[in-house]
Amino acid sequence: MAQNSGLTIVFIGSSEKEELLEKIKSTAVQCERHINYQDTYYLTYIVDGSEANIELIDSGIEHTGARQMSIRKAHGVILFYRISSQNSVNQLHDVALDFQIIRNKIKGAMITV
Image (cartoon, rainbow, N blue to C red; front, side, top):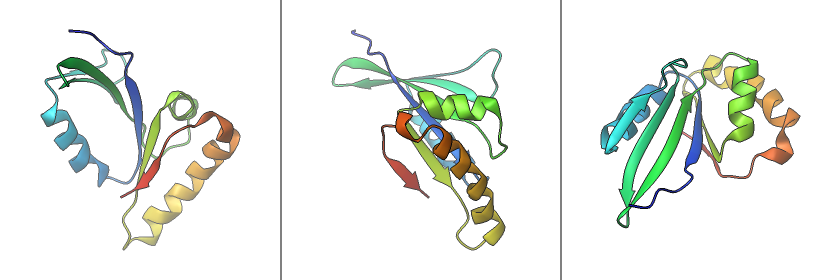
């Protein structure tokens, strides 16, 4: 089967992301965790008879160089927050700085859940 170059998706935000992360991992044909980076997963799916690969990064909420780098190389970023928690929404305010720093480098949809 042909293998594509893959997509990189970054999850940022509150703990609600864990449920979706687990569902996504459970639907993959193969799921491997990065040997050194415990927040990075490699998922394989079969799409139209070909392998499709996704690198999924659970970057957390802390502002780090690793989070900035993961956003920079991402094809998509999914932001999570709890609508009933002002603190959860406020945590995403810090994420805005990362997007301002690299705003022209992200080419993908942003989805809030």
